[in-house]
Length: 118
Image (cartoon, rainbow, N blue to C red; front, side, top):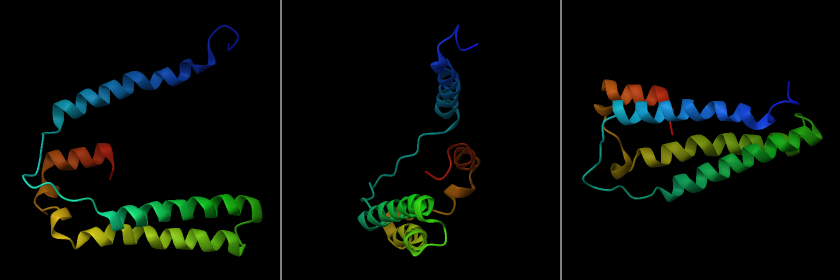
């Protein structure tokens, strides 16, 4: 079968799905913009980057040395410790805190269920 068609065509299946998702987001999710632009949470950015790098490094080292080795467990534990801290660091700052009312609206619940956390 692959001798008659280009093997990369399977990736083109995602194009209509992505276009349908884009149209759905534009039609269903209302525009919401704060009057005051929040600042960038640099501590959260650094902690999330460090957590992801440590976690991925630990997973790669586990493939080389085994899951029981200290060179794998240490970075995985450090990464798993950094990631929740990156979220909790921004929760206390007033500019980045979201209102609890916005998370109960149907449109934001719909957007969160379709788009995930990020």
